[in-house]
Image 1 (cartoon, rainbow, N blue to C red):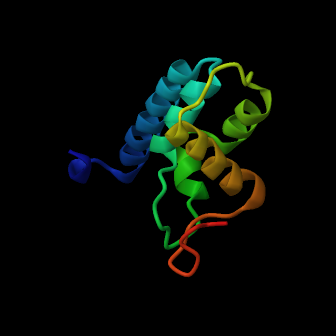
Image 2: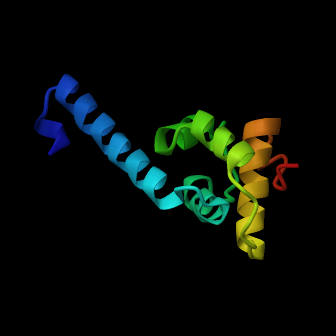
Length: 108
């Protein structure tokens, strides 16, 4: 379908997709740190990255909003190990600029 569209239409379709995805994540996360942790596992999985993952993460859900949520959401729900690692991983990316690469698979 995208192949037959002019470039401006393609851009609008792609941007509309990202807008819908971002709206989904906002609704899913709400005001829950636990839900943010679960979303982090999808938005920023624990892969080995060949390049900076920030642009991809930002396209799925705005980094500025994630930072705000990390700072502002209450820490009132227990997190399981995977959720705690998701929060730690996305914090390292957004606040320290660290992410796993082939040269540094742990990302720390």
